[in-house]
Image 1 (tube, rainbow, N blue to C red):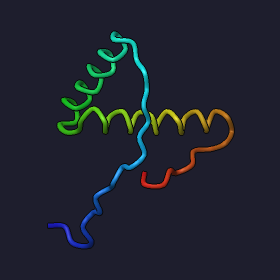
Image 2 (cartoon, rainbow, N blue to C red):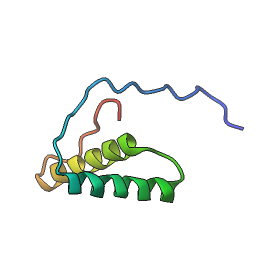
Image 3 (tube, rainbow, N blue to C red):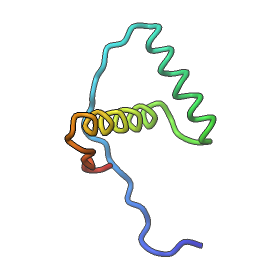
Image 4 (cartoon, helix red, strand yellow):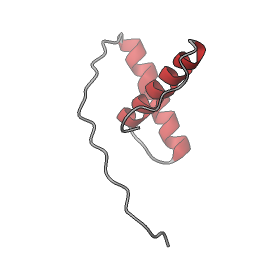
Length: 73
């Protein structure tokens, strides 16, 4: 049994819209579904957020800026 404060639900209130080609959309959806099956939970939005944040951190590290923790991360 876990004790302590319950995790606070996060509210995502900033939206990022991206235009995709139909084949790219399908590829991304299939990848998200595969990750969801592997992990046993999750959805498309969660997978996209996690993937974008991880990629952004890698890019900043390559650029010498170091990974910075995003607020609400």
